[in-house]
Length: 596
Image (cartoon, rainbow, N blue to C red):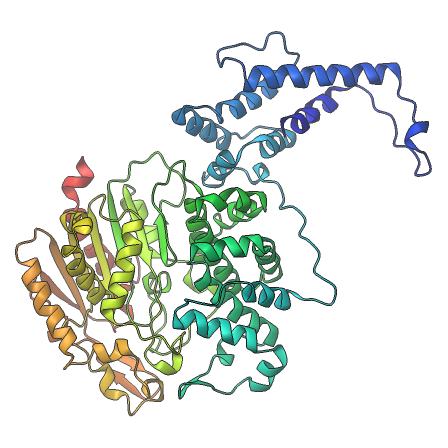
């Protein structure tokens, strides 16, 4: 790579060049002049001398005997410094590269062609890096004759092991492999049945049947990519190139792109695949995506790049765990973590946006991402408390089995809490002080996670480092939501999550009693907010989802706010009471830690 890069310099310094030969001229007929041969020999000698001195010679050596311009010399010095055995020197070299502002195009290309995988990943995770550092991805292989991306995707899915899979992976895989575009088109608008429950999936994926099939395949691949051996199969069977083709074809479909990023982020958890991911050109795509103004696109790219960056990131971010701040490499010491856990029908990003127009609890989320680019933990809290690592967690929930993403999935609060606890510990949660911020059912998950962590010695650091918990309308004593299951079509088959939230749920009462017993000798603070306004459930009824008595944990302050259940965690603006009181609590709970 250094030979090719340095030839750019050499060719640039050659004073003359001959016009290109006509197409009918053969190489044996080309007459190279004496001067041209002399310049070429001189160029080769410079390449050998420079390469030897920069990459193998002592770092303190000068370049007095090498005929190279000063600014070119600096580029090569930075390249060699980026390969130093000293980690601090490598990090400094990447930082200096990212801060370069007055280089010529060819100098950026020298770095792009000559840097190693570690440096390229570091540049992609540097906030001010110029995109000229990143070469275009290599050309994608041609599709097989009479094939399509949809068929290639199915072949990839069929090549993966189909045994020892959980029910959800089996469901998505079987559906993706069995349904053709034609059959999906015929069924569009109808209900597909699994074990008696209707699943109106056709309505949720858009207008194009082939895109629907692709979405099923991608959903299945997301699940498969959580298994390391399956990641190896995906890579070996050309999955990285195929996913890149789909990513480029669906630039106008954020949902497709996000699922592709989820697969890539899962694959990046396997360090032995890093070189293949980089060689396939994905880092160039990620470097551009992380700079996006859309919080979801940037956060998915940031997760994948963080998993690729073993130089500065010891933690691993599993599917559904997203760092909102810092998303780039930073010299700012991170002193504490703030974790955001959404509730029923929520998500890692949309739950924490600014308050917008009233929505009902079953309203579909628009695919227009411009409505969700404002994420107050990322845009406000990160500025007010830059020493925090801010993490948002995502998991699938539903009001009804009719709308469950997986028709065979029946996940209890206990199951989800153990799953999230494992992922958060892998992300390094517990290594520094923690404040938990939760909405609705998310607060029940936080309580259950802390109880489970208290039973496991390897999780004790999470308990010891918990400094505070914020509950936004958490139904500690249940909700009336499930009682309307017979009246509202969305709740005709209430999900397990909804059943567990019912007023007479034994599991909920046990969770409340156990948590109060657990918390009585712990030294963390608690703040609770509760809605005072009803929320639309479908188009038929308004419901006070979490009444005052249910939101009362029995610990800490309880503050009523004149908003509904959806907006209790969505401040109208930065100086609104909801945000300012939340900010004050976080600062108070972490006061001693942020001072150190």
